[in-house]
Structure formats: C-alpha cells, structure tokens
Image (cartoon, rainbow, N blue to C red; front, side):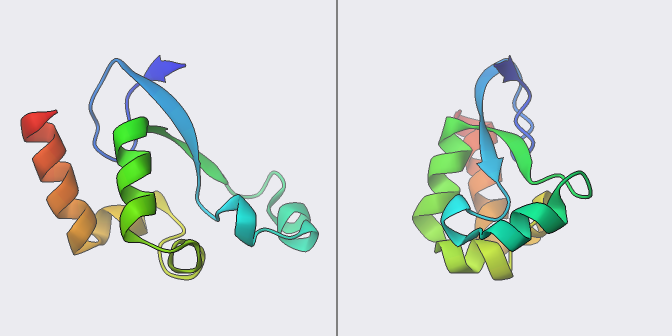
Length: 88
C-alpha cells in the first residue's frame, strides 16, 4: 500500500502497518478489548518503522508510546522526523 506516513507525513511512500501495541506484547484479552474500539495500527513508512523499533523497546512502545500522538511528542522521534523530512 502506498500513501502518507502517519509519523513523518512524507507522501507517496510504501507503507507498513505499525502496531501501536507491539504484537509480541499482545495477549488475547488485549486483542478482544481493543476490537473495534481503538485503532491498533497506523500506516507508517519502513524508515520510520525501523527507526522506532531501533530506539525503543517493545515494552516502552506498549506502555509509554502507544499512540501516534505520544510517538510524535517524543523528543527523539521529533529529531528523527526533522532529519528524515530534510534528507529523505
């Protein structure tokens, strides 16, 4: 799928689904509780997906950065976004 990355806002990129709560941290109860209530994935370019997973643990992503808004508010992510928008 191509489109706009929800993290860096670059357009016309191949996108992957970023799980806001990493799949390795899911359990059946979490999956049932979130079904239809909250968006559990966001479209993200491969560069952003790789960067997010290189600087944060799955536990951090689950507990502290489990929404696109929280990711965008993080200083490390803001630096990445500025860099990738300039060089990407």
